[in-house]
Length: 452
Image 1 (cartoon, one colour):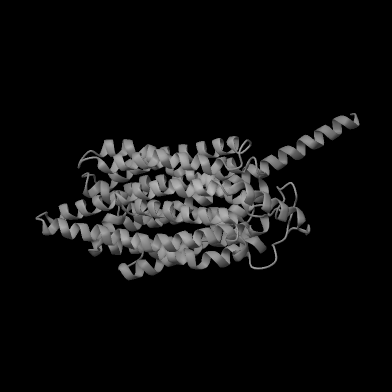
Image 2 (cartoon, rainbow, N blue to C red):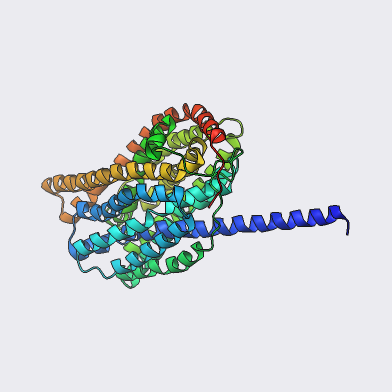
């Protein structure tokens, strides 16, 4: 065999091995992210049975999500720093095993307070996922492939939410809400073991100018000195308040306002999230990677356009009369598609404007701010629903009808928040080119250090 043939065969074998490693990593991260969102959504899917068992208000029901959010925010920053300096596969493995255990224990809760405390533990575990996984993806995929890789990873969001609604709703209807939590915890044990097998590439390995080590100085302050990040963080606060309000109360809305039972309501939402969210995520990743070849600001510009379309769709969904659940779902689907477009565009933009040694911290700062805002906003959403319900009751509505009208009135907040995303994302898109150039200059000037 000639030398050229040997060299070609060796090169092809190495390329196939490398491709296999990337596919394995992406599939494991997709699985982890799917269960990340599956587990956090279970209580949204079974919220009405929980509320009825313990006679909770909507503000108390939202507090169960706020418990998760607050602990996620509190531990996110140290975990983000750990993702910048430590072994990311270890962070992921421990996080998955922890949140799965706490989800299972949540099924044993005996009252509102015990369930609240156990959801705090779920938040601690799940806070490990985004910083470590996004840091890994940034070092495994180059700038022109990153949008698609992140879109596949973030496909776990609609898949996890959709499956959680479908499976948890059916289990809650047939067996009870506690069983739904036990089932949710099981896949995490397998995924936690697989996480130990993930690669640990040098930081900056996928960049043209490699910079492996963490940057000196305060990483948090360095991230906050990037103008694009301010607009991205604000956009995250607006979007995720909408997403958590939808996740916490969509099932309740379909049950109270549109007359569906828990299984029917969750089936409708699961299909909408799975189809609309999945299409939005994949289309977003593909389109963003195409447009960024011509315009570095293109990702955020496309996200802006998606919100222009999404806001009226969500408004029309809320406008549907009582019992018109199919029309509600028909308008909710394109609205969800547009909302999920956001993730592929914005998460890839963070990788574009932040140097490799700060990406874990950048994701943690982003999550910290929007989770604090989401916690306050979600409490306000529950308060608004309860307040409107009391007004409806004072006007003569029955207790059940008042709860339905109160929640329906609060839902108008969501299209308004989506409309506010339009100027925020557009303003961020005006900053991307300069911040990307600054990140590349810092990267090129950084001393190359050995990876982990």
